[in-house]
Length: 231
Image (cartoon, rainbow, N blue to C red):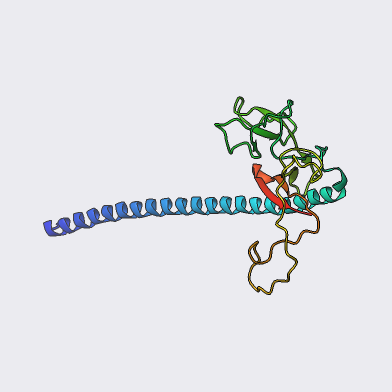
């Protein structure tokens, strides 16, 4: 005969085996959730690193596009007093058709002044479809497109930093941003130069030019850069 004590021990062992199985299932579930969280974290980090890489590639392409825009400026130096083709404008404060009224400021990205009147740049030659209808006054500013740079699509617009088009400095009604004149002395400073210690020496007074570049890269990556140049 089986003794009552033996039956009680057998029941305890069976109960213990059931509890061990429960803890094993809970541990397995926790391990599965941890593994899923780790996979999601790795995927997110990989996506972020990829997006940063695409952004850096687009910005690097913008540097090459800026060089091409500067090259255009140097080859058209004799015709920069008036608006020309290839995305060049001889003034920043564009005047309306009456020659007096100043048009609204230029929003180069289309996202800077959404609540104000503004001018947009028609980067894609599609009448500024990238902007919300009714949030801008005009889309007359055209960009110059460049050939693909490492698979990136680049365009630029150049603004002469002057109050209006015309022959500067012959026309005294035109005001432009120009570098400060130097007295001609040689600086002995070994630190960074600024206008207070070693201003730019200008043999002839010429205005600054603002070069705005937009680059479209992979995964709808967009990079905007601005460069101020002087000749």
